[in-house]
Image 1 (cartoon, one colour):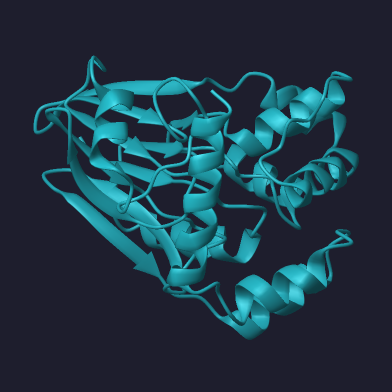
Image 2 (image 1 turned 30 degrees about the vertical axis):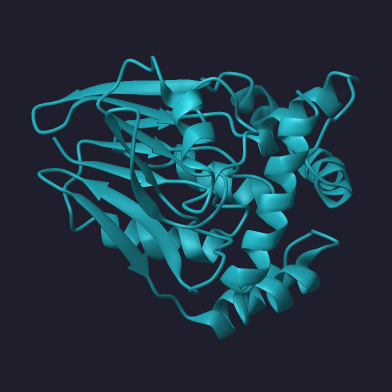
Length: 253
């Protein structure tokens, strides 16, 4: 069994297209879209492209989808940041009625049984929470508490946009990284799970991607091109922000 994992696409259609072109050569049995596919400049185009894939695709609702769905239901958005709240409103206003309905059918998590890895659990952030922030630098005791009792041999997550491979509470926990909004090293990051867990990075034409995104209807297209296509946030800066968010979540429990 071969599974490709596409997490945190963030409305970046050119990055998604580049990864899908590479996946075509891998003959995968399934694709897992691990959430936060829409929180970016081209949400409809990304969802339309995903639905055109011939390989079986399994969809997980990320915090980005949850925020949009709460807004559409007239509920408080409850985003991690003010920018996330603003972005959820922008995306919700762009989505077609068909794609709004499509999002409502996504699952919180997906599970596979692999002959190589045993039970594999795919979730957006952690098995019971799609906003929980942790990184490779998090306090090991806090991560252990989150994954203790989880019935899986391998857990695949995303959410923090940086790939890692950790041993946690007797299981392996890997981060797929971000296809469309990477932190640290640029490129479209994803996983290929077969006989091994292979951390992949796909390059794409940034000039062409910028032009495609700028032609979208998103009012945030230019900012996305500047901040994510021609540059990416430095890992040290992102770690500082994620650490602050993680500490805030602990305080608010």
